[in-house]
Length: 432
Ligand code: LLP
Image (spheres, rainbow, N blue to C red):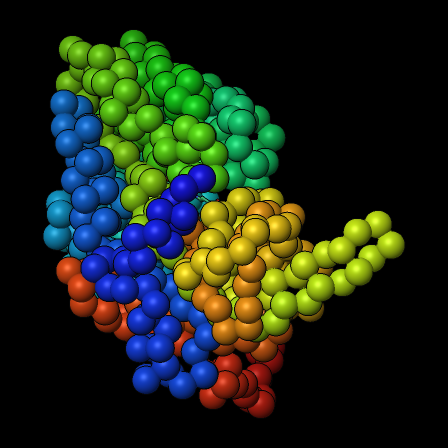
């Protein structure tokens, strides 16, 4: 449990005293009472650990931009030799703006659009992961218009593997929307000549996110290799195996950091004797623990109910900022930045949004807190800011980086003017 307790004890993040962060931000944004903060020193260290662990496999490690698309983070990972995995047109543009070369960009996910197909045909990526047979025709049509070299395509398989994570982020079981059946993939690889502008040479598995146990990921890797063998036996050998992402991180649990090194060793053993290109797409593992959400306490409400007394700690951040507790029942470590003396007691930590689901933690033990104290919410670097919204008319928060004692504002908080910026009253002429 300690991720954040540790932060509170150390008192700094990327060499910057945490107590100074919100006051410093207020010099730029006078009404800021909460913000995201990422430790780029820690990010660099984590990326190094990942690259070292998997070195024997020599994979391309494509950071899943969806976990945190802040350019400062993407650029740092690029400078450390990682590739970028995009899931949309916006993320393709982000990868390009962060200077990932075409060989260092991939596209994955489902529901490909003609615009995305045109983008990859014109601007280029190393490989596209295809989730449905119809996407092959879409890509073929776009590629045939540009005359570019054949585009590498991996077929995403649904291997029917269950994971013990939340149902919303389990992607490898039969009821999940993702992937082709292995039988259909085998047919498509065998029929690859039908798409002359595509090189159907890869298999892709991604069975879920926030996966802490290794077994389903190993099973998925075995399935991918077995399929590659089956395809080769049918005359269509594969040269790329993409094992997706999914390595979990949850510092509220014992064993909450995925056993990366052991996993890498097991994959390296599976890889012996196979001349394929390997690809990984981790997101959360890299960025979750390097980010915190800092939020001021707006109110302490003690309510004496018939059954017991309840202490509600109302923060200046809400479910519109960090949606994970409300959406997945996710637990994030929470601790006061400067714990006050006194007995810890039960508290329910909530935000100011008008929903009961706007609750970060129920009945956790926290020291005494007062209005104006700052609370640190940990494991907030992945799927935090990227999933925030303007719900309840709330601007999204500023995102700051800290590195070697220097604090930078990497993205400003939204203002009331930003919230109105898209409002229009345009006449939309109907055709026909
Ligand atoms: N590759 C593909 C094709 C993906 O769909 C994802 C995540 C990743 C890689 C990266 O997975 P990671 O290593 O980060 O687990 N919003 C949820 C997580 C959704 C993950 C979506 N896809 C959450 O907050 O837990």
